[in-house]
Length: 441
Image (cartoon, rainbow, N blue to C red; front, side):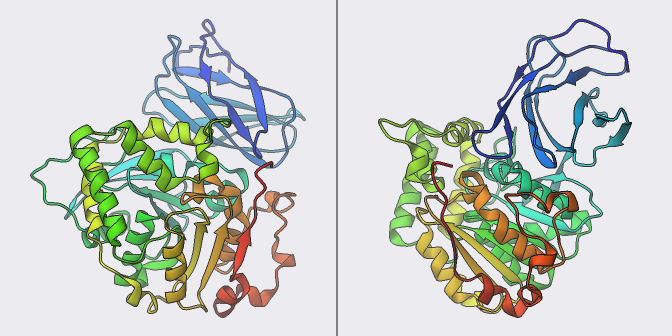
């Protein structure tokens, strides 16, 4: 396809490839044409690792017609150069890939995000659907004041994890009411939803999309909502992947702390003090930095994303969580497999240990991640990879064949003991697992 028009400058976010601190520089141009609103050509400089998943982030600007934040998953194959096409508004994105042996092929990308606003008996809920809806469903639910961009981006953009999850599942990112990007403030006259109501909303979302049993992944408050959902509707849950989960009613300390955050939200909005409170909830001390070490990029990014939240919507979710009941006694009745991750610096570490003690050990496993806070999905997503692979292999979900030889992902069906894949062995084989991650890596 011939390009026409002058090149337009764009700002390009740092591109993440493979592992920590592995970056690529990009040269680019945007050209106008009759059928395309913009055409981005990315010429990669430096080493490109074959057979890895790669994320490109483009920020619009400079007078071009791209004006929003676009994220793309691109599967690189050996000797391939990528041309990414952004089609006019409302159209479908296509990826054209030309390989080194001059073969050229074009394929439709089925991993475009689509947002749905599902009307439920307890208000409207935003659901971001990513992937082929014919695949099994994986639903996600984030922590307080977060959505899928700020809570699960690190995991789904981590190359090996993305290949494992996106190859096997269609992802349904559920946002707590009013937590999605661009959300309007919920009417103060609307009744406050309880945690029971939020769990019931998930059932209505499954009905809306025609889904039967689903895999569930939640972080802290989201893990509580999904656990409650699994207890109420056991036949609708294939498995639970819980990150720093809650299961008990708030302690007096947590209750008072939540009341303090609620007052800050009500009187001052998303102020600096409140952001610090939330960031301590999410991340480890190492991520926060010190006088000598600046805070990490994920902290800075999270601060910016918190500015986008509607304060009264966050307050409503916080109030619901502060009135949550203890569900510990019902956990023993769960028969779905449950994989629990928790950072050893998470303020909810003890609660995760309590939860795993209440779950049936035949169907549950605990992974403690060292030098990590509550949000393992963002702070150390690589620590989740191998446990996730073992966990999902028990359901017959495997990594795509081109990824099984990855040096950072040694697992393959041929090297796994068959008895590990049986439900009875899940807890015994995986528990306890501790991942020690060097901070110098």
